[in-house]
Image (cartoon, rainbow, N blue to C red; front, top):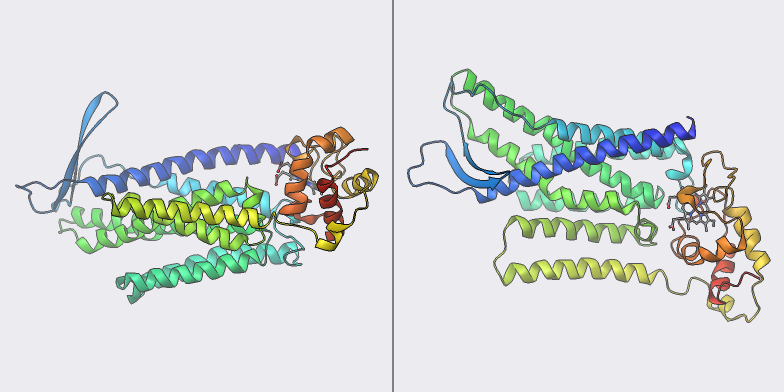
Length: 401
Ligand code: HEC
């Protein structure tokens, strides 16, 4: 595909994905909030589950949650499903466009595992389909009534997937596939469980029958799962812009910690904590989550070069550095890139002149020495010795003459 066309599609689909995602997650949060804040009434009729008053947009809203009487169908009934479907469809289109139709270096990092593009795609798609299937089977099985066991099992399996993918695909691709898996589970819950149970409720009412409380409960269980997945998924979507996360040498630990912390924060928001207990738990979760992430980030920026190599007093010659950068980076990072995929310099970063190299020295260190997320997918085959050379050059103040 022409690279300008690809860029345009990427932009447009991402835009749609963001809008749909905001609408879906925003709705989901509002419904969950409503459910938690419903008030009961002394004279509540049968089937009444609660009511709530809201003020917004220049007026008052009165909402009531209830089961309908047989034959009591309202003329106009609003559904909420397209936000979920369009978020998933645009997300999947992006995955195809960027990771599957794009350069192999998006999916494969030879330093992680030497896979072919096809094998990496199979692993990615297999994770999405297989992951959803296993989750769905667990929550269809009798285990669904033994929630602590089912939740524990899901966490263990998810941790295994996080570990496995981060040892098979490039860090960036591993992260995005875990986000895509959670997103697919969420939309699968809407498509295979929440919608059918709503259709069933309506069918019963239309047929003049009593509504079955079990249906609502089943849908609610899946909807709560979705609610807990929102924060972790949003973190993963952002993480692709932070190479310090997916590029970390313990990226799977970092991801697991932030996912659990995100879900816990969501939990503390759900249960509307009482000070001080839940307040302390919330603060502790944030401190532990953020603290571990920071510790992991700084841990990998320790001495990146063997001590012996650091101790050499020998001055690094800039011309050697320049050759490395020309060989390993300039194929993409140049005003006139020669790479087959990137026809304009990525992020508008170019290393054609010593001044440009000097200007980006800190970022070069971060990407090529510390988290090793550049060269992209190590497409140009940069060696550890070359990274060590750059590291020594930084230690000597990154001189450019
Ligand atoms: C195959 C193409 C390719 C090669 C080769 C490559 N890069 Fe990149 N680079 C990219 C892409 C794509 C992006 C934007 C996505 C991203 O930031 O991960 C990028 C972004 C960057 C950025 C800007 C983002 C930031 O984190 O500040 C820096 C700096 C960078 N690369 C450094 C390097 C260095 C240093 C090398 C050589 C050791 C290198 N790149 C080699 C493709 C490449």
